[in-house]
Figure 1 (tube, one colour):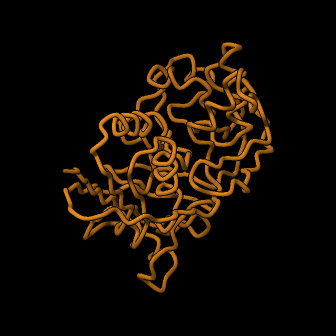
Figure 2 (cartoon, rainbow, N blue to C red; figure 1 turned 30 degrees about the vertical axis):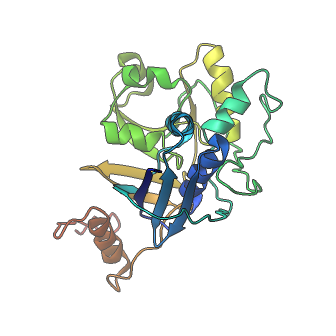
Length: 285
């Protein structure tokens, strides 16, 4: 008798790439499973009869499935019946290189080793989009620079952060987060207690990180009017600026500022909140 499991994963966006990554891993592991995306839910159905394939699938998920800022609750249940096969094809998105990509780019035996034109095609997509990165990375700090973390193993030595902030920083969306500096040398270099920090987010920055780490640099700096900044508050992430990946705001108020504030409350599932608007030009609040 076959054992079938259904997982319903909340995904708070209409983007299909997370379902695409999961579907790619299903194909790679040859497990009898199905992935579909509907109504902002990723539905994974697995036939667990073949334990060897189930273990391979589990290992691949642990190694390659990225965290996403939009992930919600997961509900798991047993079910009877046949698996309905779906041909899950995801559109291309402007997202960071995934763990499959990083493995290809950093492995000296890979045909894509240090390939600066590499495109991700690991979320059941065509692999046609490429994140443009024309920034200059330097070990020298200048005012308002963003820190590119080139050696993730040094993160806890450099910064103080919650687990949710860490997961957000290294998610597939790769937002820029404002973090508290732990390292005294970094404090003295920047003259700051806090810095905007970003994990490698493009093919170019991944390649820069690989080469910088080999040269003994744990971080570099660059200047960017960043398109994806976020803050993590009480286990919820809110976007400050996000031209690249941002769900459309709900129309909760006709005033633009109040509408944004109400959307932040809605994202955090708060019923009430207090907001203060500071107007530098008039000096009013």
